[in-house]
Image (tube, rainbow, N blue to C red; front, side):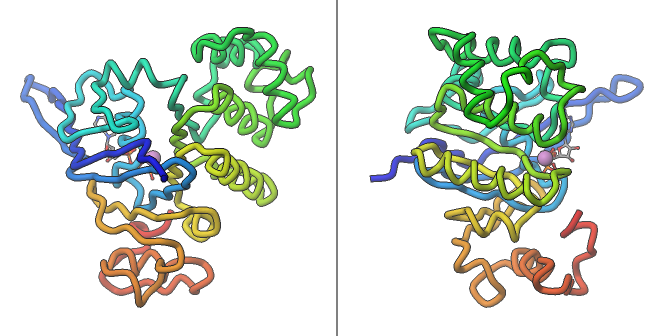
Length: 272
Ligand SMILES: Nc1ncnc2c1ncn2[C@@H]1O[C@H](COP(=O)(O)OP(=O)(O)OP(=O)(O)O)[C@@H](O)[C@H]1O
Ligand code: NI
């Protein structure tokens, strides 16, 4: 039986901002998002820039800024989790795999950051874990002595991947882990993500690379303007099976389909 690791239902996220003159303004970038990620599966989350995908990841990890309010529910392994619960789970039983190395501390060497992550995850021997992560990710031991700015793009992403997976989390929320990487590294990231799911984790993969996601995902959720509007399997992610015009437009805009954009959608909304 596959178990739901993450279940998000009707999530809405608003921000309260004070404008000049102390007038309060509320913006609601996430209106109604629902998704479920199962153990052993890759759930791809796609949609235009600004649709609210990253905010869902931050909310899942309990990392929304203090001026955010949230409604709806988030369950981890069937249990409703508050923001405090999520923070306790983050870094241990669920992790965020961020897009860029700016997530790393620029002033700390790689090995000390890996040790810190291992301590946070409650692992017994942080130093041994740090060494093992480098080896498992195919990085020479001396990588540990380097600072983030001394890493190449491919090395950075291996370190981030190693950091996000060192405690074998039940859930990995990968937020656009591939942009800026050359094709060989992209293939490696995707294979690694598939491997995490095959080892039993639930993986949420936020991506603009729909064509690549379709090759490794079990299901695809389409978001638009703060709502999840449709879910499909890769086999049914095509013109004639998708229900929503917007989802069909995403499919039509895939490079393999010649960037054919319908008139009612402009290119900036569909591609990036
Ligand atoms: N702290 C904040 N205060 C106010 N608005 C915010 C805040 N953080 C995010 N937003 C807004 O929420 C919207 C959704 O942002 P989010 O980063 O989740 O989009 P996304 O779908 O991940 O986009 P992309 O594909 O470009 O990464 C954006 O319009 C953004 O400006
Ligand atoms: Ni994002």
